[in-house]
Every structure is written in structure tokens, then in C-alpha cells.
Length: 131
Image (cartoon, rainbow, N blue to C red; front, side, top):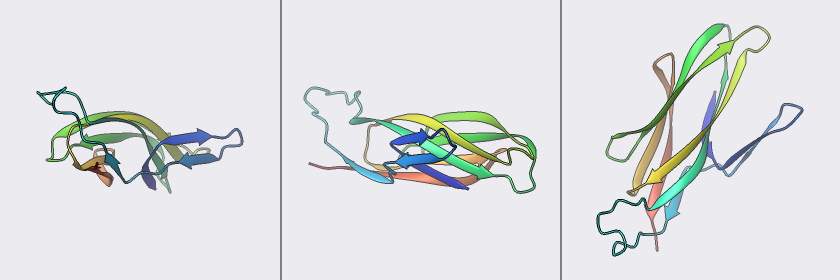
């Protein structure tokens, strides 16, 4: 299993995958509080990809794969669920999910990967406000 956040995923015709710009942390510019006194606008809008690669082993059939965003402080963020099928011909699954993350605060953003409701792993993204 692999789960990561990146900037771009390119599937090649022969079946290989190029993963570009793997991200686990970044620095965003501080917002201009005078032009946004209520703090409504995000500091940054991050167009990311969540790439999840699973190999089934002996497992077969349909399963549910989930991705749940968690903002700093523990509040739930964006979420998605999809069905994947493992067969003898295709005993693996690669899921490439677009994530458009609105960053309002610095801190640790997380994305939990679930398989049939069980947490498999957590991808983290440390956001720091810099000059």
C-alpha cells in the first residue's frame, strides 16, 4: 500500500505512473488582514492529488475506499468514498483523487485513508505561514 499527496499524477500508455511534486509540508504567504477583516478568504487554495495504491493479496470482490480530510484542531474537512473491485485479473487498485484544499490556518492537515470503514493510514500536510 502507498498513500501520498502530490502535485501531479501522469498515467503512461504502457501502464506506469509518474508522480510529480510529492508534498508533506509547505510554506504559505500570510494573508492581508486589512483586505479580509473577517478572515473569510483562505490563505491559500492548494490543488493537490491524493494517490492511493492498494494490492489485494488474497482479497477479492468489491470494497469501499474512503478519504477524510481533517483540519488543524480536528474539524472534519473534505471527504470522498469510492468503490473498488479486486479480481484475479486485477488484484490491485490505484485511486487518484483531486483535492482542492482551502488553507485558513497554519498547522497539521491530515487525510485518513479508510478501507471498508477501517483506517489504513493517515497522510499529513504541515502548513506554515512564512514571510
